[in-house]
Length: 409
Image 1 (cartoon, rainbow, N blue to C red):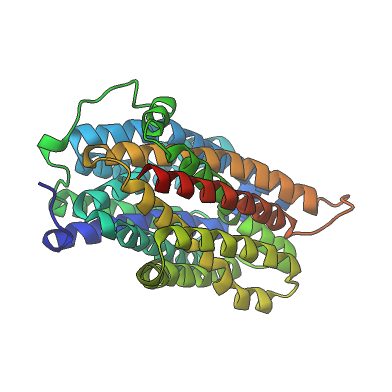
Image 2 (cartoon, one colour):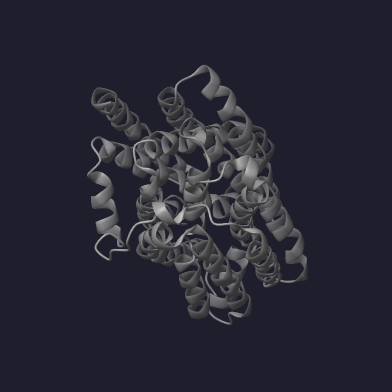
């Protein structure tokens, strides 16, 4: 039998801390990436943004390939071994990146991190195992909050540790991830009972097979489409924010870290607090639709901000779109059986992987188009306007998905 959260307090905290470290590990290196890429490649900021897009691409591409396999492995062998191996690989990745003398080795480091990138999806499957179906959106919200808090700590720590050099944040991230690995080695119980495991099949353990299997569930395809559009647009923030801050406001690494930290505080508040309140007074479907509208408005609003202090004041509004993901995950999670939760999360991770492949490549090119010296339509925030339009397209898709889902129930 799956254990309840009450019986697995330490395990739940481990899962949340793992997600926290995943976000912090990303955030802790973000303030130094522009300077590091420029140092080892000798490029300008716009070209560094494009190279940064390639780093995001290889991370996302490997995550796209590996996530369904790891999700299916967790359905066969349990969540614990997948989580622990992922953490060990992630720690290795930061060590490699810390020593990288050139862009090629930096690229290899992100490739390894992509293979270990199933941590978040497997953590979600673990939470689905130990929570009641009607409470999953709230627990997925806690995962989102842990991710947001990681973004508070990561950039701030990264900006401070960067005073010791552009390599220091990578080693700090490696130490924290490996500490968590050894902690989990001793305290993490398995969440998936043996009688609920299913055989591992290669035809289902790949991006196409995982998605095709999940799409056999009536009405799920449209939810996948809405999920795809939302994340394609949402990835504009991690893809562009550092470069946007430096281009529009000439921010230092510390100021970039502070802005990400402020955003993380409000994002965590939305995921841990606001989502729980909204779910008490609104349906999950209404929360998801409202979140998409708020997300589009938040992105579009950046087009009109010309001063740094106004942007800091505006950051809380940009975080409101964070209510979309837990509501969507909650709806989809109730559509599959307990033994297929890992497969569903693997399918979602595949979609997420596609968006994190495409979005950095698209958004960094658009950012470069809006900021190149010879452009006739200079606007550092122009890329956020494009992302807002993509988000608006997701609203009618989700509306149709919800109508189909209600008719099939």
